[in-house]
Structure formats: structure tokens, C-alpha cells
Image: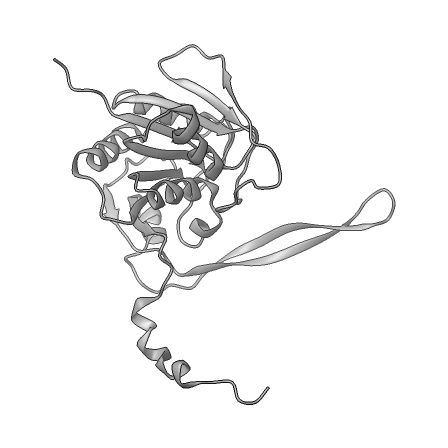
Length: 262
């Protein structure tokens, strides 16, 4: 008797028609039974948002192939919640998100809908991995990623992940040079310096478009950004406990404060 194949839930934040989503689903078919549930539209930079003010709906999409596709009118996090509670009718053995069209290295992980889906899965005890390519093209070339994605996925399934930890995996853009290997990294210190561009509509009313500059603030060579620059795959162990544990003692004086009067 053959062993039962793992149940894998695939999602993303680039919408159900994204090239990266279907590339990831096709690769996951090598590993297990695949169910895809994605958003109706692009939901990049939605972070860990969920839908509470509108009704959520899920509908199947006709598609030839080895995996089922469902579309949700909510966010990537909604897709994960509905995916295993209503669509799959079982807890998946693994949730994978991506392949994102654009890097989620460094501070980008805070804004990322791709990684929010992964973190949501891990919060509920499901092993999860997010995959992103450092290329924003809608027709990005993912052909150099197959072995890495399948290998990382199989490792996560066979060896598991530490409690509360998911993986943020970023790939360098395809170039004439092959990827050098894999680095386990820390998240680089950086920020976005926002720049709001002024515009006016046909009625003369002002509106603003968000732009910005990525400001790198890290001098270390062990970061995800450096790994990508050196043409390595970066893997950052990522969690949902945002407590800065090694700074708790430094704030002990706060416990002596009290409100007087009033």
C-alpha cells in the first residue's frame, strides 16, 4: 500500500491568475495533493488584514490540471482560514504561499500579504513556507527555482519546523550566473522612506499616490538582503511573537512607575 500523499494548501497575494501562483502549485504536485485558494485581485502589501465588514465568498475556478483552484473575495489570510476550515475540510500538512512577484526580504515581511498567509498558518499549528522572487515582472522567469522549492518543501514536511517558526524564502532574479546555494539569514535592518506624490482629480481635489525609497541600515553580512545580492537563496526563520526578549531587562524601570493623583 502506498503512503497517503501530503495535503498542501497553496495561496498568494498576487491574485488567482498570477504566474507565480500556478508555478508553485505545479511544483507542489510533485510533493502532494494540492488545493489552491487565492484572492480575486492583487492584495500586495495588505499585511495580516482580515475581512470582518463584508461577507466572504469562495468559488471554484474551471481549470485543467492536477490541482483544484478556488477564488476568495477576501485577503490572503482569509484564504488560509477558509482554505482549511471550509474548502479542504481537513488541516493541510503544509501551507505554501507565493511565488511572490517581488522580494519579501527585510522589512517587506511586515507589509507582505504573502507572508501574512504563512504566519496565519503557523499561528494555527500548520507548517508553512513563503516563497518570493526578487523580480516584480508579471511574466517573471521562475525556471531556476524548481529544485530549491521542491527541496525546501520536502524538508519542511519530513523534518518539520520549530514550534512557532515559519520560513521566509527569497530567491534572486534569474541571471546568467546560477544560484550559488542557500543561506540561513537574519532579517536585514531597513525601512521604507515614504514619499507621497501630489495629484489632482478632474474636480481639482487633491489626492496622493504612495511612493518611497528603500533605506538599508544594516552593516552585517549575514542578512537576507546580502544573500540575495550575492546570488544566494535566503531563508529567514520567521515567527509571530514580536516580543523583543533581549530588551525586557533594559525596560525594568518601567515597572516602578505609577500614576499619582487623579
